[in-house]
Amino acid sequence: MSKLFIISQQHQQQTNAIKEGINLAKQLGLVPEIMSYSYESLSGDAYYNPRIAGVVREQVRADDSAAVKQQLSVLNANEVQFTNMWCKHLVEHVCEYVTPDKYAMMLKSIHESACFRPLDWQLIRHIKVPLMLLSNHPLHKANSILMALDLGTSDPLKQALNQDVITQAQQLAKATGCDLHLGYVVRFPQILRDMDIVNTHTLVKEAYQRYDSKIAKLGLDKEHVHILTGNADLCLFELSCRLKAQYLVIGARQREGIIGFMLGNTAESILERVRSNVLVVPHRLAD
Image 1 (cartoon, helix red, strand yellow):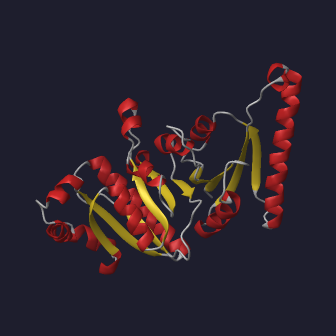
Image 2 (image 1 turned 60 degrees about the horizontal axis):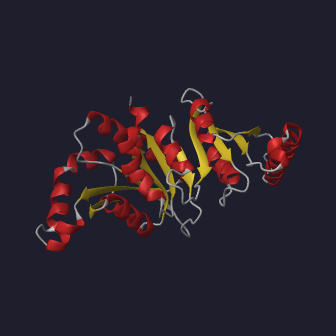
Image 3 (image 1 turned 90 degrees about the horizontal axis):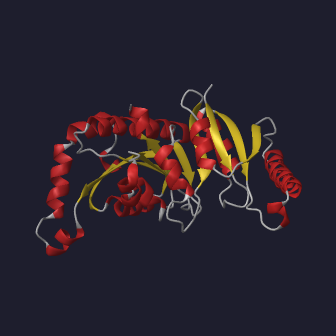
């Protein structure tokens, strides 16, 4: 049976990743496995004296392990496998360790940071399995799933990524009992909207007609199909709030190089404001 890899970082999360991860694993029919990562930046005697540094590391690891055991005890889930390790470079370890042949998904709480390249951005760019990021500010009484697709693409890789997003979203909807919605954004620069050169209502109407056959194959009610115009990240954020989406399922192309890091992508931009849990589907699933 495939596994759900749960990342636990004491002192670096607000949402209880262990509790939510075990619950989601049960719903999806996966085996939960917890990796508790410990790390503290040492200074003073602990930095210069290897013996003291070793004592500090073992104490931190012991405290973190005890915290995980306590949570598992409260959840009556003592049978769940968990491992603790001292790790400074979490992304490198996770991306090498978590492979599609062993794991169906990984899960962690969103890491809030003002850094240029925070932890979650790095994971999005390099993961090999779908990544569930738990919102620290979830919507109240959320009961739907919003999947974001690029209906207008003719790129084979993007089309394959669309299909992977659909598969993941449908599986999640079946497991959780949430209503499934489709969101597609016709990208339209703000400056053109302000100039009132193009009628956005006409663009939306034409998009519904143009992609009618693709939409029909999904078997969704018309009320569950939403086509909007504007900036993708802002439109999807507003739509997810309006629908009270518990989950937002989105694909990530994982662009490499300096330009990719500087420009970012929709999946990354959404993390800055989203209040839904975000399931990021990597493009490598489509390879």
